[in-house]
Length: 196
Image 1 (tube, rainbow, N blue to C red):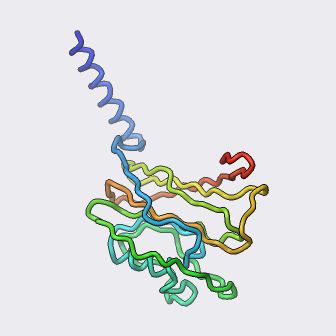
Image 2 (tube, rainbow, N blue to C red):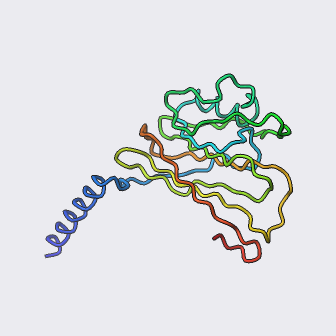
Image 3 (cartoon, helix red, strand yellow):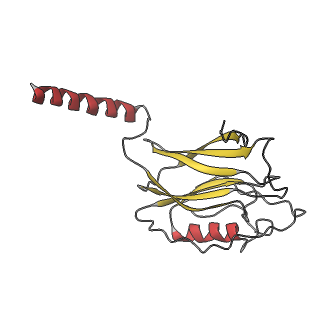
């Protein structure tokens, strides 16, 4: 009797997952996320999200991020890798003061096993901002990446300097499907510590 119930449950679970995948819902694979780099100072001063799948694309992004290549002087402000899914990089306002670029070293990733998700929030007028990758779902036709930008509420004491919050996350398993980014904006109440 137990074996019959287990068989029926297994058949039901397989049918449910097949239907979910056919409708474009997340495949039942587990995505592992690992933060590679996160901070509030970047050479990328506009909102920019992308998936990096090779070392050449990572180097190009890292050079933009660390200020080795200026967005305002680049002859082609778009990244040019065919393996890249990204939003368009826009030319920075040349009247803005130069930023102090991050000094971290280029991360090492095994692109045979993982891909890099990079999210840059662009220039913010104060400190206190944070951007995170919250979820990655591999669907039938795309990778859906959920992001949250946490901004300080009016009751927060923050620095009065321009910041560029960013995060870089390694994700497994790899996928060559196009990426779709969903950005949700929330506020942090510094009196209660709650994010709403």
